[in-house]
Length: 143
Image 1 (cartoon, rainbow, N blue to C red):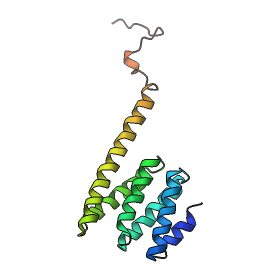
Image 2 (cartoon, rainbow, N blue to C red):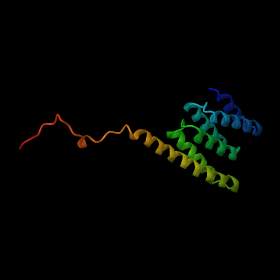
Image 3 (cartoon, one colour):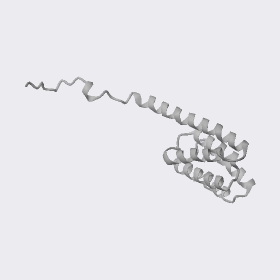
Image 4 (cartoon, helix red, strand yellow):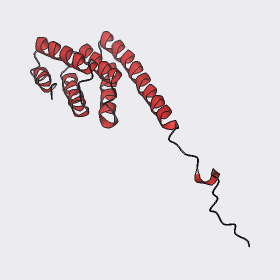
């Protein structure tokens, strides 16, 4: 994976290296180069950085880029990304708190927009229930 060296750079916990690596990861995500597996690895790395209180605003920015530029994040990884935003919302720093609140609002909006878009895509594929369809092969039952 192309993202792996940048994840390793974030693992150094060196602030300048972490900032550069997060910026590179954001660019890769905005160009939709990140796979589903890599996106999960990015979220796990962001979680580790959050637990170490490193680059909290950049973490929120990265989550937002990941969730708004592509649809590779879903299920457990999506829930972990949202929980990460909520955990940062409850920090004592006002700037981080307010940024996390705005990020949560944007992420929830994006997720619901995805649901609506998927519903629209599948509307044409849904058939009427069997009970409502006419069936010329039915036999009438007399009692």
